[in-house]
Image (cartoon, rainbow, N blue to C red; front, side):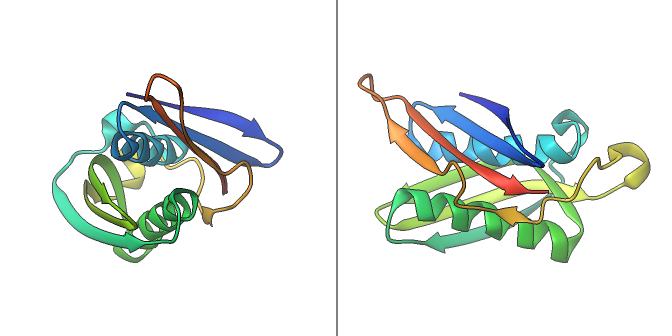
Length: 137
C-alpha cells in the first residue's frame, strides 16, 4: 500500500494504491492528511465511524474524502489511521485521529473538498487498485 501526491495547478492531487479497493481508499485518505501535516505526528486517540454510498467507485471516493473533510472541520480533528470496508455501493470506515494541536501539527493548508478533477479508480491487470482525485486547498 502506498500514497502519493501529484501537482495540479493551485490544488493538490492525491493518489492511493493497494491490493484491494478499500486499501487504496485508505491510502488516499492518508495522502489527504499528509497535505495538511506530517501524518506521523497525528496520534490515533479517538475514532469516528463514517458511512458513504454512491453509484460507482469514483463517486464513492469523492464522497469518502468529503466525509473526512466534514469530520475534520466539524470536530477540529486530523486522522492518521483508517479501516475501510467496501461492499457494493457502500463504504463503512473507521478513522482514528486526534484534535488538532496547531503547535505540534503545524497545519500547512486546509483541504476544502474533493473534486472530480483527475478522478480515477482503476484496477490493473494484476488486480492492484489505484484511486486518485484532486482536492481543493
